[in-house]
Amino acid sequence: MQPDNSTETMNPGDEAPPNTPGAGEDICRACHGTGKVEGARCTVCGGTGKVLQGIGGG
Ligand SMILES: [Zn+2]
Image (cartoon, rainbow, N blue to C red):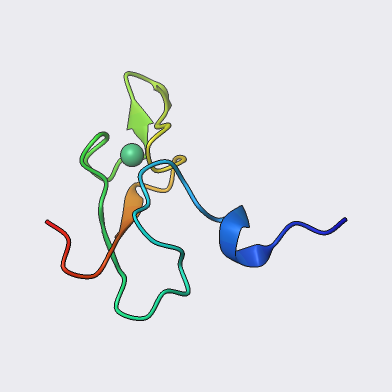
């Protein structure tokens, strides 16, 4: 069984799948874009330093 691409790249901090129209990348607030929190990989953005914001979020 093959994992779905749209969900494979989802991280806990993402508000929308990468292929969502209108969704944009934003700096992860948990790690401030570094991808790490206290030396460990940020679990919010999955270490990417970025999260996806949904439409009209914030
Ligand atoms: Zn992060």
